[in-house]
Length: 165
View 1 (cartoon, helix red, strand yellow):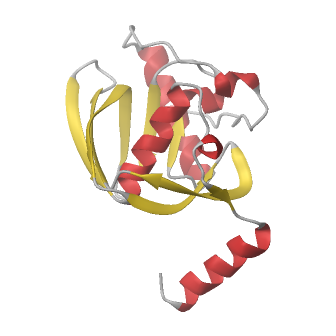
View 2 (view 1 turned 120 degrees about the vertical axis):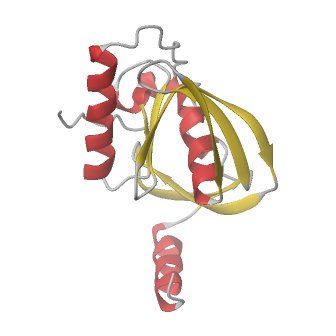
View 3 (view 1 turned 90 degrees about the vertical axis):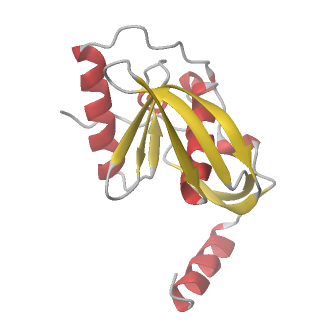
């Protein structure tokens, strides 16, 4: 397993639509394992294959106790609304406010090609939506209704620390 370089805003690969995964082989397993190592090393919550230069529909999401793998994912259902802060490993040191569904159910394949469903709420729902948008060539900055200044972000982080969050 290896760490992959994370592409940043301005790299045209991030604006391309990814192709579905059709081969569930060792090459895919290596990509997934590398993405898991990369997201953990970067202290991220999620990572999509185009962020490491691979135009395939692959996402990993770090839930803390486990990292889930989503191959060829799609959102089946979404409900509610949440408003919150987002950042991105491909948009370093910039943060914005984005409206997302509060709850999301996704369908995806695992590394062996077997289909399954996963339901997430709050941060996980936000992450699913954020990462799946990468697969269609979009960054959260397109959806943010407001980008924060560095000072506003620091103030928000200080407030959260004082509140014990």
